[in-house]
Image (tube, rainbow, N blue to C red; front, side, top):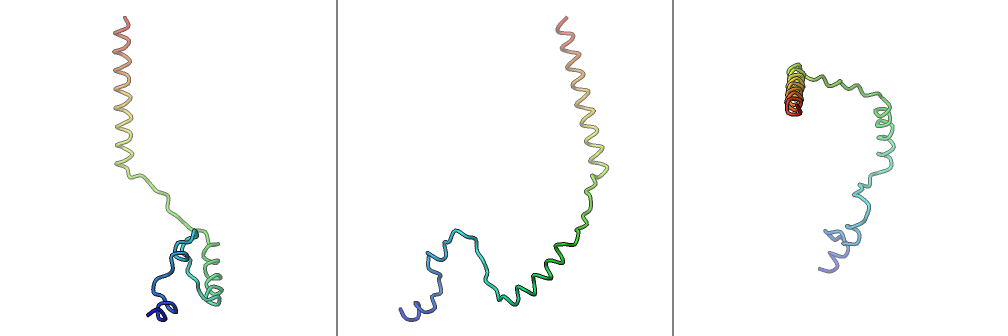
Length: 85
């Protein structure tokens, strides 16, 4: 039993499994060289992204909130002005 587990243990020893570096997968060097060229081409290409457009109902809702806030603020100012007299 000891011979089988010592040659091919199914569980990685704790000292190796708990390294401070993140998990790294070791691949064949030939495969890496082929993939590097393909990923470099993709990284250099500019990515076109759509600009997020707010829907019209959100813009209207925001405008209504601002108007309501402004109205409340003006009422408070008038009330404070009356109380100061």
